[in-house]
Image (cartoon, rainbow, N blue to C red; front, side, top):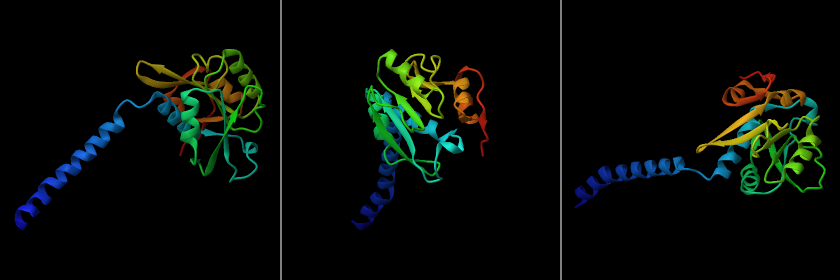
Length: 192
């Protein structure tokens, strides 16, 4: 009896483990919630942007992200960024209402808001070293730095390189290579 149990253990258990791994991989590749995919994009964008040195008081300062508006992507982005670290800096998020001042931020995510309010946000951060990220159609063309777009079933992004340059932000060539650049050519960060 022991030999048979040993045989099952040696032959069946590895097969079951392999099935579990394959099932887990398939689940990971199943169509994810669009909002969660966009939130992951936002996090990854932050890894490939360099702010001017005066944007931070010290090397341990947090990277502060403002979230304007609501909607599933705004909520997913806030949740996804919780307790994350980018380039040694912890990420902090702040929800901003329609009448709140932008303040000292490093990035702002513009969720579901009306076009006039979105334009006010973009005007408020226009001269600052703040990465503006939004999911509204044509966001990068209208003055945002990074616009998330859905083409078919895939999330893609556009970069307004002129706005990034005027904000004194350096965007990694790796990120630029994956983007559709809608205006100009950005100063590239030296990639390691």
